[in-house]
Length: 164
Image 1 (cartoon, rainbow, N blue to C red):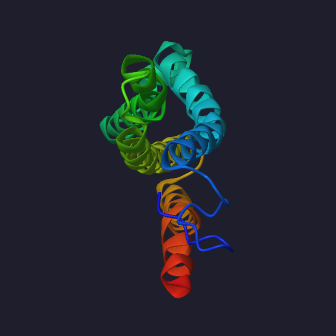
Image 2 (cartoon, rainbow, N blue to C red):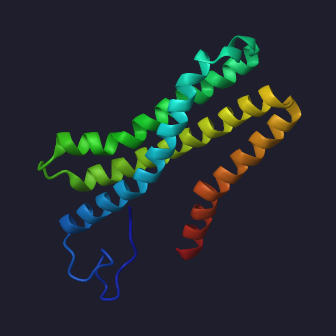
């Protein structure tokens, strides 16, 4: 998690902040951001875990079962990636490895976000296809995937590249 230099030229952006303090602050900020994503993925995952036990589930097509599988597994993957930083922090506590943990956790957060986008898209595809029709489901899924891709990845990356 590279940061631009601070007003005083310090590499951390916070005057007088040590590398260890910067790693601590970055990790806390990362965990605060993950709290929002974890709650969302937990609700989605819980919903998906109950779906097969619903009375109408036996009526889904093979294609819808595949959509369900993708939604369920990607929600599980997102959960694992989002929870990994906290779990690893407990294991690595006081080992002097905070900076590598912050960088690894940032990658986990990005992969978890990608898995969450896949789960949201495929779950929506499944539900809209089941309730309405395939063409509306496909259009909705493409729109959602595009929004997630732009708002969560491409937009911030473009802004970052413009800022140097």
